[in-house]
Length: 101
Image (tube, rainbow, N blue to C red; front, side):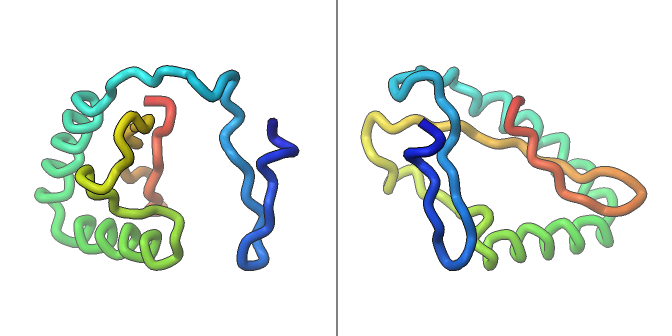
């Protein structure tokens, strides 16, 4: 499965996720993602400098094509959806995406 999904795009290699089955059902995790987003908003609203750095990092990730904003109205009916939570960490600022959440 992984060999079939490998391709080179704009000089970079991409590989699909190693699903055990193409028809795997993902649990609905929007509630969890919204709860974590609430925690993150409270943390960022309490620290304007952190909020600015976080916003800059997210915009950079969008510009680079690492992440994209998704409009729910544009998604294909019946498509699988997984909300990826994120937060910042450490004395050295990093944005961390928690795909297992």
